[in-house]
Amino acid sequence: MEAPDTAMPDHALRWRTDLSVFLWMLVLAVAAYAPVACMQYALKWDMVDCYLPWRHFAADAFAHGTFPLWDPYQSLGYPIYGDLRSVFYPDALFAGIFLGGFGVRTLHVLFIVHLALAGTGMYLLAGHFARRTAAVAPAATVRLRLEMDDVAWELTGPMRCALVTPDEKRAVTARLGPDPLRRNADPTRFRDRVLASAKPIGLLLMEQDVIAGVGNVYRSEVLNIVGIDPRRPGRSLHPDEVDAIWAEVVRQLRLGVRRNRIVTMDRAELSKPISRLLRGEGRYVYKQERCGRCGTELDVFDVAGRTAWSCPTCQPG
Image (cartoon, rainbow, N blue to C red):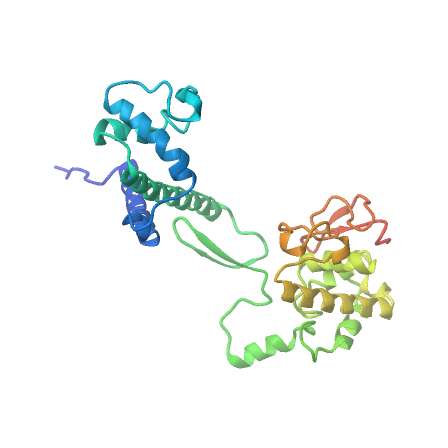
């Protein structure tokens, strides 16, 4: 005779997991807002001026067996059912039926509970996206992928991904191109490698043995600023053009370090202070539809497996 299957159904296990997450969030909310949770400090502003009076009236009406159609004490007595903050939210109904009314303590308790509910929702939402990410096959540029049941971590595009000895590490770093952020960097190594190569300059700027630290954003932005098409072969450039690229890369990277963000436009070209720019604003071409310098519609194409943007007017081929 087979033993009965005592395994917990998936939905029951999921429910228990969600409940445990909520309880942990509740503990965190109480700890983070201990003065409010312990009634040492009162909630302020709309919580007391608007939220509490509406809830108190509605809960009191429910406690006395009447339905609160309007509140004669607030907003000149306009119908209470016209405001979703009042009757149709379940806490007022629950407080009126089971607690006998809605007071300041109830307000504080529900504030903490709502914080826990919000934290639980964000945790579960993040878990949903993490599971979906883990189910996606790794891209071609992924060199290392660590997976669990519902989450994955990827290392993308390193020169080498392996366990190495100190000597091997030094050999790898010796092959790197000059670092524009270092004061002692030698730009002649960069110039010589570019002028000797038939590869597109947009590709050379992404190769770490040519120049270190230039990513896709700076590649597109710098080439637009100096007026060079990313598809031009390195050997077709004039030495002065290569030097201009190096100088602009150095300038932009140092600005990025100082500002802790990538903003390539000059301050005079910005419509608002740098501190108020949204992510992605303040750039000429990267992920833009039109050139930030002349307004021309941009060319969008692939270089070395990465999308590149260039302006046919400012960067003639």
